[in-house]
Length: 66
Image (cartoon, rainbow, N blue to C red; front, side, top):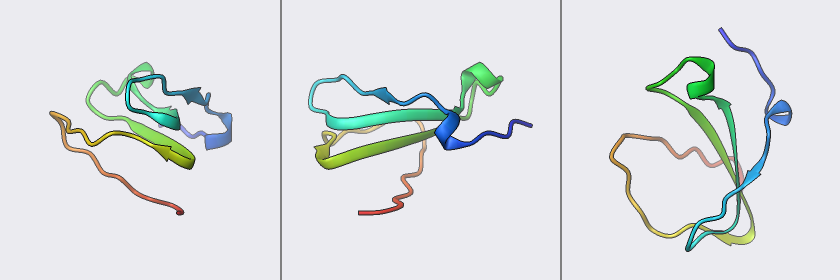
């Protein structure tokens, strides 16, 4: 079992077409031995956004604030 804190996870700006003011943290991912599951935390700055899109896999968006 991995126990971590979000403030201990690297924050990486997302550099993709159609994305503005967004960054990502991965507290649990493939590097932790979970090839089929990950926890990703996205932060959007004021006026930040991502384009409408879809994924092949199921996922959950849990909005903390804003």
